[in-house]
Structures are given as structure tokens and as C-alpha cells.
Amino acid sequence: MKKVIYVFVMLYTSIFAQDQELMIQFSLFNEDHKNNLYESAYEYGWNVIIENPEPFVKYRLFPKMEEVLFYMHDSVATNPEEKSEIADTTLYFYEKAAEFQSDKKPYWLAKKAFVLETWTDASLEVVIEAYSNALRTDPNLDTYYQDRYGQLLSKSAENNPELKMIALELYSRLSEQQPDNPQWISRIENLAEDPQELLEITYKAWQMDSTNYEKAWKYASLSMRNKEYKRALEPLEYLIMEKPEVVNYWNQIATAYQKLEEYNRAIEAFEKLIELQPENEEHFVNLAIMYKNQNNLSTARSLLQKAKSIKPNWDYPIYIEGTLYEQAARNCGFEFMDKVVCQLAVNTYKEAVSKGGDYVLTAKERVTSLSNSVPSLEDYFFRKIGSGDTIKIEGKCYDWINRSIVVP
Image (cartoon, rainbow, N blue to C red):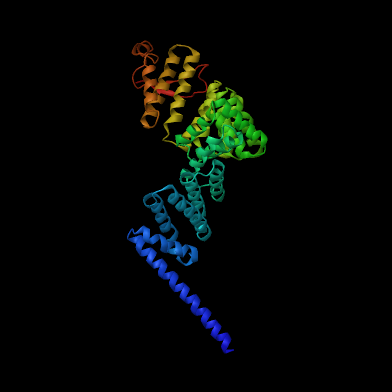
């Protein structure tokens, strides 16, 4: 029994001594790092990482050691052999960091790929796989590393269409995540010799995986961006059939139909959008414009009034209402009542101006343009109509208007 106790005491003493030694090593490392004595910190820190880094992770062992390794590579190593040795050490370091600091694993794997790329003569295939491994652990990896990965894919894409497709998917995803960043569009354009080639590549990728919603959407988005509205219909119609509740699909297909002047189908799409989002004023205005294009001015105005009830201070529906009156007058003729309707259009444009929105200048331009189309003083004088009198708008062209103007 005494022998067993003796062995246990000796083992405990040995473990305690090892822990004490490791704590001393880390303390020396930490102190030297704090004082920028990176060369001496290197040995102490490396001993801790080799023996047991786990107790010291919370004290930022790995970020501090990374600073030391970069210093050793860039400022201490003076020949290719020394730099290669530090590079190998750093690659092993990143493996340990990814193992013991799992919450930052994607970062450590990305940095490992970066070191492989910039410090070693590793093949493109090896470096690409390293970046791919990092991206698999976190699809939202820092875009700096995603871009480096994409650039390497692009270099290898000439002889490998599959890599070109991976690069296109990468940059398409980044473009969707950051639509205001022109860099991703530029990368996409550089991957293809011309937009048509890019469209064909994206289309084939979808056809090879025809039930993949993401690939269908990428093809649709690219088609819309390149104003290939007819091509966009196929993927959009598929997406709507599969997921009829997604508003963005209906928005895009409505725009495509509108651009293709398929107004009846555009009307159906905008009606569906109103069904999905009955409080979205933009859908009512867009639908009103479709009816305006078909010269159904009464229905168009009803829709504009609904938009105004949702957002009273928005100038756009008021401006569009002014164009309805102007369109009606031009369609009917140039008699006195037509001039009165032009005056109603001017009054409506002035109301739009009073809202102080995006269409102030446009509305002012329309007021100026109609200055010779409204009733003149002579028109009022010969009809014995004075300032302040009310004129009811009537006649076969205008039975839908049911409005009056007050003579200026």
C-alpha cells in the first residue's frame, strides 16, 4: 500500500512540476511578447504550443504567437532556408491553432492557405484546396480570403471549366451579399470573354442541376443584369412555380414582362405582388403604370389613389397621376375642355412639387412644358369665366375624371 501511495505522490509531483514549468515558459513568452522581444519569445511560445497550449488559449496565446512567427519570417530570417523553416513551422502552428481554438478555426485555416500561397512554392492545386477547406468551415469567411481563393481559381480556369464555374459561383454569391461592391461584378466579367459566354456558362450550370434554386436564381439575376429579359423568364417561371410566395421572384418577372412589353402578364405579376404585400405602395404604382400603358386611365388612377393612401407624402404617384391627365388630353384633342384637363395636370404636378420628393424637378419640367397647352386669359374671357370660378371637367373623353379646376 505504501508503495502505491509513493508512486502516486511521485506521479502527482512530476505532473505538478511539468505544469509549473509550462506556466513559467508561458509567462516568459508573454512578457517578451509584450516588450516586442519576439526572437526570445519565439522559443518560449513554441515550447508551450508543443507541450500543451490548452490552458493558455484564453490568454491569446495563438494570436500573439502568430505575430511572433510573422516577425521571424519577415524580419529575422535572412535566407531562403531560414524562411522555409519558419514557413513550415507556421503551417504546423495553424493546424494546432485550428485544433485548440475551434471558434476561430475558419480564420486559422484561411491564414494557413495564405501562408501556403505567399511563403511557399506549393502548387496552385494545393493552395486552392487549402482555401476551399477554410471556406467549407465558414461560407461567410472574410471576403479578403474569398477573393484570393477566387483569383487563384481564375488563374487555373483556362484549362478547367469546372474551376471557372466555382469561381463564378463564388463571385456571384459575393455580389448578392454586397450588391454595392463593383469589384465582384468586375471579377465576374473578367472570368468570361463576353457576357454571352457568362450567360451560357451559368445556364449550363443550372441545367446540370436543374432543381437547384440558387443556380436558377443566379442565371435569372445575370440575365436581368445583362438586360436579357427573355432569357430571364425561364428560370423565373421555374422559381415561381416552385416557390410562389417569394416576393423577389415576382418583382423580377414583373420587370421582365414590362421590359418585353408583355403588359397583360406584367399586370398579373403585379397583382400577385399586391396579394403578397398589400401594404407595399410601390406595387400599386407599378400596376398603375401598366394600366396607363394600355390607356386604361381610370383603373390606373384608382391604383395611384391606393398608393397615396398608404404613403400620403410620396410624390411619385401624384406625378404619375399628372401624366394620366396629360395623356388623356393629348388623346382627345385641343379644344377648350382639353386645355382644362391640361390645367388639371399642371395642378397635379404642382402638388407633386409641394411634396419635395425625388420628382420635384421632373414635375416642374412638365409644368413648364404645358404652359402653352392650358387655357389662356382669352379662352376664359370669351367664355365669360373669371378668376376663382369653378370649371367641371366633362365630355366623352373625361367621364372617368370627375374633377373640377378653379380658374387661376
